[in-house]
Amino acid sequence: MDPVVILTLVAAIVVVFLVASTVRIVPQARRYNIERFGRYRRTLQPGLNLVLPVADRINTKLDVREQVYSSDPRPVITEDNLVVNIDTVLYYQITDPRAAAYEVADYLQAIDQLTVTTLRNVIGSMDLEETLTSREEINSRLRAVLDDATGKWGIRVNRVEIKAIDPPHTIKEAMEKQMRAERDKRAAILHAEGERQAKILTAEGTKQKDILEAQGTQQAMILRADGEAKAVELVFQAVHRNNADPKVLAYKYLETLPHLASSDNNTFWVIPGELTEAVRTVTRAFGDQSTAGPPIVQPEEAATADDVDTSDEIRIPQLGAGSTVSLDAATAADEAEKQAAAAVSDAKAEAEAAKSPQVPRRGRTSGD
Image 1 (cartoon, rainbow, N blue to C red):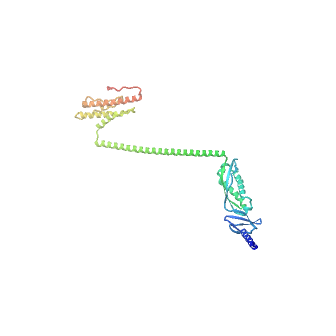
Image 2: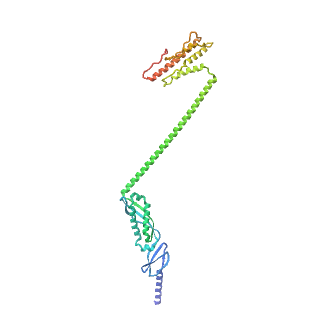
Image 3: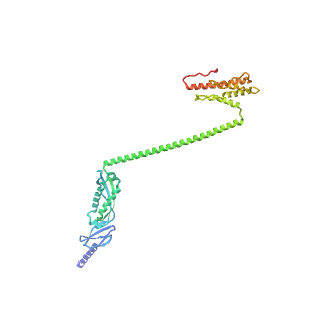
């Protein structure tokens, strides 16, 4: 082969190698650290970059996007001497590729160890209950410490989250019992509140019912009283309109007397003083019906002798020899006297029977 051709091929190969070594293409969100003869030279940005072949070389390739690092569970002792396992999740981003490559040998391991030590310091000042309920405070304190320490490494910690807090098994059982007791307590409180509300509503309903019943009874009594008042007024007006004479009134008076002792609860019966006057009026009425002329009025001495006797029977004055009342009138008067006396005796007998029910009493004979 011609030596010229060989030299041309070698020269072409060298040129291609030099061009390939000179041109560097960096992807987006990547950073390349360039060293020249072992010394940091510069950091290549995304796009087409030219370097010196043979003299320059790429030391590290870094990703500047935000990244997530999840650590393994680490045992941590709380203030009340309980060992809990805590998992953390770290969100970080490389802001200075040169510092991340030359200030720390392994930034991930450094961040992990720093997280563990900081977490033990923070959790060591809290008890278990506070640890379980203070995640936001723990996260903020971890982020403050990590951000301050990793700033010189060219790394910014955006967020630190506690993924899980795993207490011992015995503590879990105690927590479950406590949680169950709290739920039972809330259930009992809710049940008691429900019963209280139910009783209050029942009492309110009973109150409203009693009020409505009382109002209804009041209205009914008012209407009944108005009706009775109107009835009495109508009767009164009818009596006065018809101009009833004393004879009819006296007869009705005697008709009402037997009904006074008809009730079983009557133990005391009062005979009014006007009974003799009513009997006399009836006698006169029957006398007017049986004789043609008007009845002769008895003198005042006979009227004074007609007073009511205080004995057990009511006495009606006897007609004098000079009276002009007919035999039928006298018979009617005697019959009225007997009826009144019988009513009084029956009332007294019923009163005594009510006081001493064990002693049987015989009925009054017709000769009394």
